[in-house]
Length: 318
Length: 293
Image 1 (tube, chains in turn blue, green):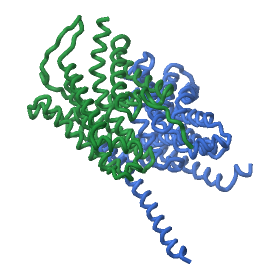
Image 2 (cartoon, each protein chain N blue to C red):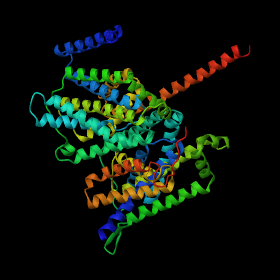
Image 3 (cartoon, rainbow over the protein chains, first blue to last red):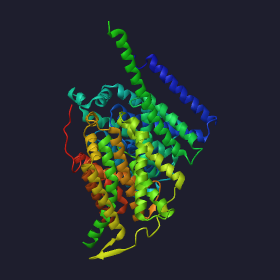
Image 4 (spheres, chains in turn green, red):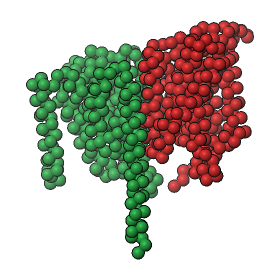
């Protein structure tokens, strides 16, 4: 209890509540028009996606390229429920069912595929997401390639904020729990953690299921905010987008994922002014950022080596 | 039965194309352990180079094929030098995202210059002949695709197994550091691997253009992924494996479109991938390696 109300926690909560209040005020005073609101919704949904993928890829070290597949399950489940059940609770039911279905799928897919490592796992999850996309394209009740439209808009800033903050809090706490530390140890060295008595399969699947659960929520929020969904939205590129946020923000850093989500949303908002070369610029930025990161990293190592040499020179010959 | 053989023939021509792309994937993965996502787009660039040389420069099929292969080889080496070489010791995920970035870059640069729409290859690039044997229709284009593929694969086998460069390639893929200690120029060897792999993809590009007549800037994504499936299916890093994988994926795909629904043909390839990865991750011809601590 004492820990729960520690100064640090209170400080963070105050900041979060203040952020919520300020943006709510700006929206209700109409200073933030629809355009800004859409950007904010994109940021929130991307934060949920990136933080949940970070749990899988960054903290547990399982390289997934199929996060958009889980998102689409949540999106379709929620859209179908809100379209077909007309009651006050259909939004919550939709989010709940979407998240649970997505988590279930994560469980079913995770058990066989998480035996794979590195690139193979990436390709297997990519294949899974493609299969989900193709099935959604061909089923009758998902509307085929055209997708679903006229989905009622239930999601607003309050719910976006509630779910985004909730995701971050839950995942942050999970990582700081004993289960979370087990996940991190799998990333560091799978064999060593197995030797230490950690059930690696269990924790890998657990991380995968939790990640899928929140991706489902993000999908559900997406479908009830943007009215329209179609299978093309949840393709390979979407998975890459999420992974890029995680990698640019830093693998294993929740704060980084949040900042990168905001930054990338701002960048893509600016790039919208140049529709012709938007994707060229985006991909160039991607390559340059990756090369620059590596350049800085290796520079650092070199500097360290220089220091060690200097250290040995001055202190070694005593 | 006739239909089955017909589908098999169609599958072989499609499979040759997958095999050519898969060879590049498998060679590059074997030597630098990188899934070169840009490979599918090099294939697309090959198709466009072929299109330009045939339509605007009125070249025949074979000169156009050579030019496409040459252009793609240079492109592959440039990409390797600029984007992948600095990341050789970086984490897997960094290299992978860079590869995806390069892939997007190629797609949208081509889209910028050639516009997003579909371009059609001229008719009669190859003589429009066909023959019917026991009710099975074989076109001259199909024969050509198959022949070009086989010729290129034999050439590749020759390079890999009989020349100094090939020996260097095998050595580097086995152990990069040891190869360097033995005086092999690792950087050049990797460049040569990219050049050969990309040239094969370029050849596949022009063959697809001639076979299906239509090309577009995003045509490389799905064949690229399927070729990777083929490479994994045959055992990644193994050249005959990529061939077998390519032909199998092509045959299965045409069978699914012929007997089932063509809508699910892409899903089947990925389902095969997941099954292979679960049952035998080292692939059909791969050897199981034991995990070392």
